[in-house]
Image (tube, rainbow, N blue to C red; front, top):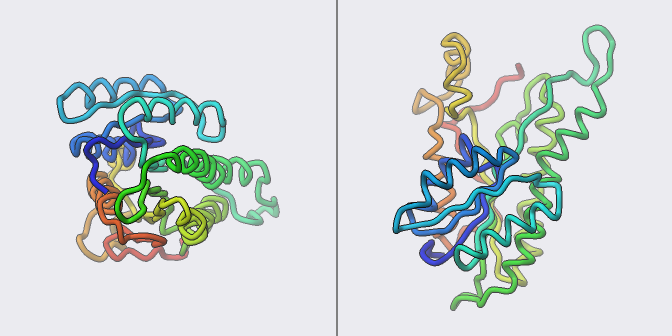
Length: 260
């Protein structure tokens, strides 16, 4: 699928991996609705990247679990081109707990629920509503109408000690990929997920040097954190390659998380 004339929603698009994705899609001629809880940051990025002749962008503040907010983001994307692309980057973690702490305290239940909501449920919500809107598009010669790219993590495959909630939500996103691809084949929408390893987002790059050295220690090659634009490059490749479907793709420099 070519980017020119198309439009996308990028959730969590105001910073880090999302912002890099926004920039790459806009540079390719795609209109982008930057959907983020940080409405001010989303609008600032839209003003920065959307003023050139090769692309447009608009910032939309809101919650990925709120149907009306998602509808507003879809409407914004539809105003920028043929809405065809959903990139779910929004997510995070609410804390780190062992299932039973060393003091005997059980895992915080609300923390697990909140983490599941911001990652798996939010990703599902934007995907279902976005795909329903994309279904109205005219198909191309291969019957294709659009593509969804979700963001998981290698923690969803090899979660570390204290990562139970985060790992479970990212495993859920990985587990959605093939059923989503099969469900949405009927309307010509492809689905893939990216499972990043340790990525050099602005937040990570601001960590103390000793912490950054520890994070890089188990990365095989290249011996560094991933660059946000490398994530964005993979998003673009998935969008452009119509035969990529139903795949979970690691982006981690051959990193395998140790137990802790």
